[in-house]
Length: 270
Length: 287
Image (tube, rainbow over the protein chains, first blue to last red):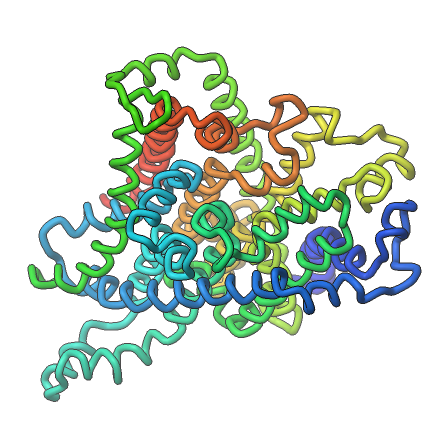
């Protein structure tokens, strides 16, 4: 490609990222404004900077516990999903067995179920097994869509590892668990990272099920926010500050996987 | 050829149990409700296929389904070509690449209700950046809580903002996997830019694009939180998509029977379209 063309075409991603940043900028700007300033009219930058909105969140337990709850069930879900998905993905990628293709497709169909469909039955199911309002309930419920995705991603990455590796290890006298942990797992490190990233992402952003399955003890931050939005009327600054803080964990996670993003989004299938 | 090994089932068992617990039991509850009528107090009466019949003939369901198809159709038509175009324009290497990738992935990691709240704040007529710009700088009357057209434009823009990056990142992953030799060969043959796109880049992106379109279809067809927070389905019922209507019936009116019947029809439609699409897109690979 010629040089001038290159320079011109880079404008497209630049404009696109600008478009992506605008609403985020507005949210962050709002979070530093006083309620008075927000309601008095339009200002592109905060006129009087205030940290009050953040102070409220960091000192009020109902607020900061929302974040802690969310992080607990998201981490729990990621660990459960990856742990059970690893052996399953290995089975799908290395062996053929009775009904394997149907099972794989059935798993994926669970990714297609609208969460709205499951909200009420989930509430009843988790109340019945006495897990309602626990972190475990949300973590297990999110397995519905995260396990299929994790199996799908890991299977893609495992497919890229030559089968000779397994056979050589068997000849060398490695037991299966030892081979899996010390040789196979390190060779699909990137895949595990990407799968964990996706599990984190979809569990972190989901609200409907998380809200349905919790009341007080495990209430996610997103639910605390919706409550503020409806009950306290017009606390936009506070809402903006809470929203801004929910972006941070995602940003940290992206930073860690930044080198795998391009390949990872292809789920190892390119 | 893969080895046939029936004991591999044991490796799949934990996944099977966990997903079955979450999928089959609630699904059975839904099926159970869908054939019964309740007047509260845990009293249920057999209703047969009555709810399904009523629902399939109801104008309200048709309207919500129509809006749902319009929404999903519009965002696919916008996001897929736009995503491919942005991926093509991205530099293949250099310091810009990680910057672009990270900023583009950011919207996807924001909780869905925050996405809705963020766009709400962004579009408030006199306070929001976009709302102020439209009303006071451009002089266009823009208020999405009153004007259905503005509401639709806003939910479409929000979804484009939220998810186009998925198409970009997937297409980009396909593009960077094309060896340089392909381009050099095309240059020697004097291939046009269009020919390079049509015969080299597009086929290489096909697999990832299939994933992108499938994920976008499934997620946009199931969209609930963002739109609920942003418009609440209004003004009137103009942005009441399937999920929003379903939650209104199930949790708002507590009409369990009709809601369950609707859930099953809804799920069946999603499944059918995904399956059709998947079969069509992968047909050539099987040969």
